[in-house]
Amino acid sequence: MTEQEQKKNKISLGKTDKERRNNLIVIFLVTILVVVVVLLFMQRREHKMIMESLNAEKNSIQTELNDMVQNYDSLKTDNDTLNQQLFVAQTKVKDLLLEVGQIKKASYDQISRYQEEVGSLRRIMRNYIVQVDSLNRRNQQLMVENEQVKQDFMEAENRNRELEQVRKQLSQKVERAAMLEARNLQVIAINQKGKEVNNSSKAEQLQVSFTLSKNITAKRGAKNIYVRILRPDQVLLVQSKNNLFQFEDLKIPFSSMREVTYEGSELPVNIYWDNSGFDAFMTGDYTIDVFADGNNIGTTTFSFKK
Image 1 (cartoon, rainbow, N blue to C red):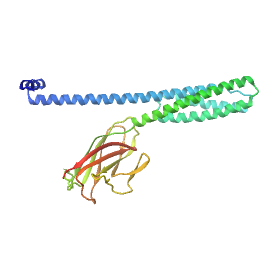
Image 2 (cartoon, rainbow, N blue to C red):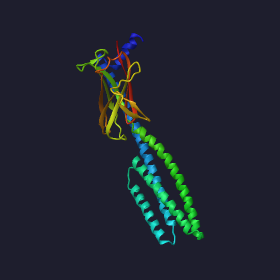
Image 3 (tube, rainbow, N blue to C red):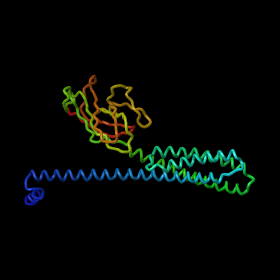
């Protein structure tokens, strides 16, 4: 680049160094703002997709319940006792249908509960179908109607299998959406006076700092946050062999933990490793992993120089 081109670039960013520095800061902040807006848009879009899937499954449950109500209408016998039982069973279906219809925004837990109730009502209905067929097997017209009921029931079973597949897919989406993230994860070494140091021989503690991300779908309340600190020689720092937590299908050791109260908003967290009573920190690269709700929510590295 020629001297004339360099001067031209400086002029385009400002006349003075201060103006050029301020303009670069503004450009940097605008870029960050654009990235944040894009991330928020993607999160809202995924949440919208989850809600649409939940509403679609709710509508499918309503359709199945409506079919069950109509099927009960076709189950008629000359047995008064059985007719009374059919009436009570149909009333339960109608009550559940009314309850589902009154929900404006269905949740995953509600959909799962309703699906279980529908399965129970379906099994009850299957039992009544068998009874009605046995009591009215000599009536040809009723046998034809029962055949239609069976056909409808098979279609309901097929819809249920489809709903179960959707439920599994939805469950996976909900789990991914509800997973927390440890943002701005960093580690510093602290001496006895609480000051930051880089020398391994002077360090007494490691401070692991991060911010739990905002997540409107994650479960709220008390949460245990676990930290695993792996030395350069791949040995895990642990206070006690009994310090274990559940990760997937195993119980694995942790270095430090802290209980926090999470309410869905961003939450700053500091967790400390106290090296008192242990050998001095080694020089080299340490690996730090953070876990919450059975998930690895953040990983970073930290180095002690010689």
